[in-house]
Amino acid sequence: MTTIVMTGASRGLGRHAAERMLRDDPDLRLTVIARGEMLEHPRVTTLRGDLSSLRSLRAAAAQITEPVDAYVGNAGLQLTDSRTTTEDGFESTFGVNVVAHLALIQALTFRPAARIVLTGSDSHFGTFRYNMGLIPAPRWLGPAVVAEPNDLGGRGAYSTSKLGLIYLVHELARRMPEVDVYTFNPAFTPGTGLVRTDRIGNWLFRRVFPRIPGVNTPERAGAQLAAVVTGPRPAPSGAYIDRSTVTPSSPASYDEKRERELWAALEANLLPGPSGTR
Ligand SMILES: NC(=O)c1ccc[n+]([C@@H]2O[C@H](COP(=O)([O-])OP(=O)(O)OC[C@H]3O[C@@H](n4cnc5c(N)ncnc54)[C@H](OP(=O)(O)O)[C@@H]3O)[C@@H](O)[C@H]2O)c1
Image 1 (cartoon, protein in one colour):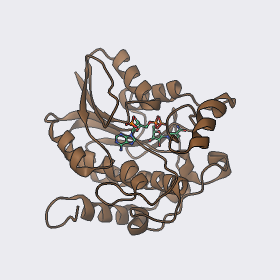
Image 2: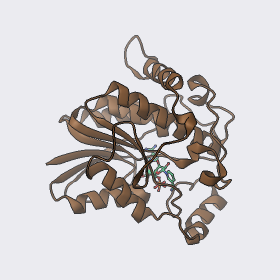
Image 3: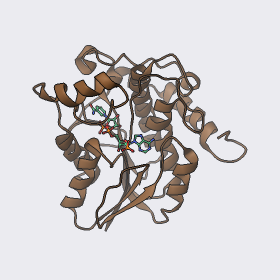
């Protein structure tokens, strides 16, 4: 029996991924951490958990007592500003897209050869080829700035958070040699709820952009994510998987100094007790 914990399974490409994994493997048991809409299925256990609250996430994770075969960190958001904070005071985009995944990973125990798959974004490249001018390039201003309310703007905070996510994947790959850790990039996948807080952007994303030839679809991206989680081992730990292809992420995303700095900052802010502040 395979046991997988997943976030971001309530809608969008993650919902398709969850349904696909459940369909492909009749022995699969999925524990979904979700704040709102549930995924109804006899082999799904839903735990209430909001990625913008470490307290709520830890309460959800405390109910998962067995070691797991995978954590799929697909939950993510894009906002219209970078001024709001999570319950713990992190800038909301960074708090949900990066910090929450680490908090959950730290709270889970993994079986040997387990996988951690975190959904990144090719917006982290910061070039027109990958963002079509829709999202500013990431600006890595250091963990102290990007994790707190800042001037990056909503979409700038988004691309920056996804660059930070790759740093986290690289650091986790070094620190957790017993599991495989991957970044999954769905590429441009209009039709999901990703930009729902931006009224006009959301209309374009749901109604207009899906008609652009060659864009990914939520269903296809879901199948690609499912394959990274449950298919044959795709690559050495730490790899970046663009839809179904193992490929390098941006040159700036390989930066051991930044990776270690981010880890140190997150660890200092996440761990309970005297060494942590949150
Ligand atoms: N669509 C694209 O073009 C694209 C491109 C590159 C990367 N991605 C990434 O793909 C992933 C899935 O996004 P999507 O496009 O499918 O968007 P989506 O439809 O908005 O799905 C996002 C998922 O994340 C969950 N989530 C967000 N904030 C949460 C919170 N505070 N607590 C709990 N769950 C939360 C949502 O749950 P609720 O239902 O409760 O909101 C939902 O299940 C994200 O990481 C996104 O950054 C998307």
